[in-house]
Length: 600
Figure 1 (cartoon, rainbow, N blue to C red):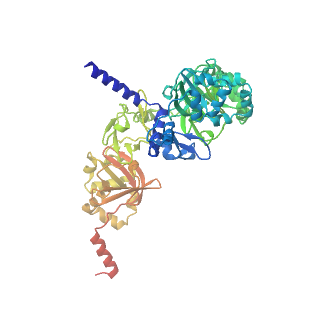
Figure 2: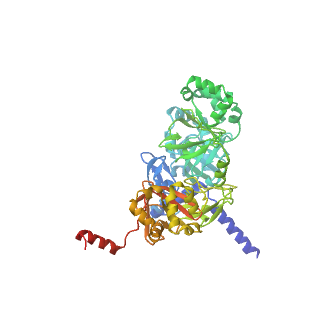
Figure 3: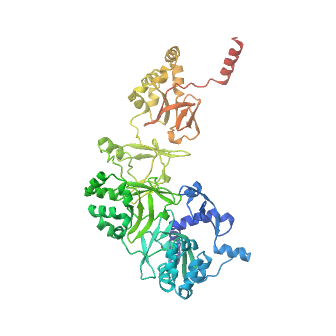
């Protein structure tokens, strides 16, 4: 009995390990799936057109065919296994592991290999041990300024050796071990290397992006990165104190008593306004801000993000929260970072021990609208957007009833193209937290307050319709429980009818009931479910055609004045015309014949 149980536990552990893939491994798997039709171990990547920048990406970026708003091509990359298979012309082949020095030449970091030789690092990375090296790509070395490169290679036994050893860790570290916000002790004076592993699958090492990962060697592992990384020993506060272009910010930080925060341990992003940014503010306004410590602290907190965000991790727009509790839209356009859609970042990825700094050339002024007044109506509105259970959208089903904290009942509608709760449809993937789940919806929820008849009676626009329903004997129908969609003609719609035709209609209860039933379908259709064309069967028997054109709902080609007026037994659309059932085919033929012959 013990052995099967042990086997079961082992399989369970393996299953959990497989399920808990890191974000990097997830996008890598997606890229392998995209490339598998071209051979084993082929990865499909997205390459920014006009550059050498390549990315493994998730489904969303793949289908958008864009990175940072710029178009991408779709090259494929062959792994070492696949290359050897082709060389040997065998279906399956394996490349024997080499030491780190030899592996550097295979993975596109031959410059690192060359400098390892020159700096006398080669014997160490050829010999026994277990190391990790974050190897700058050949392009990374080429992008260094001539002055920086000269200072390294002119003193190969000290500066270059120290620089290379700072790229190394004295143990084998794979991407699954590269946890967000952690540090690794380098082999140069144990100085820390900062690791960030972002939800979009991008991994950065001191804000250098991981390009190729997990290349195993006999004595360790090689990761290729897109920059030559430098040691960092200063906190954010110390960078501010030593940077000439941040002199005004230095004064502002001191006046707002934020120095201790920017010296403390943590992982922040400071969007640091330069002297130029402060100079764009009128002097009188600037002096007033600098003279008000509380207002100044609020302003500066609006420039500090709660987590470290390296520029290389931003490949699409995202909203980030500041220490002030406000939000900023951080995005990118080609090579430039943007804030709230504007390319105002002058210098990016200045690394500190407790975060990263991006220099901005404009002050970021938070919205001054202030918080809304939370009266009883607002409180009830918010409570009716909160459901008592923690739910997942994938388990919601059509007709499900949800109870809000405001004691209202909400209905779930599942359509082919949308998932809606009352009049609001879910607009984004769930965001699940420890104590709840966030559904982003496309509009404010309006819980129903009464039956279809109750809602019509309470709205003065429908007084003529209410009278017509009562005359036709349909009041009971629209009060009972049900699932109605009502295209409700307004008073204006009835007034547009010829007076004689209108009076004749009111005098014939059977014909009136027939016309009114043509305005009612026996299923609920909210506007979020309407894509191109939806056909409903009316209670009169004929079809109703609901369509969307230029973001306006149309019923039988007539525009709807107002959509999604919710009732406990249905939904109401206000229309400014009375819909007419189409006459039977034989009646239309007879009418045409009569017109053509001038009468029988």
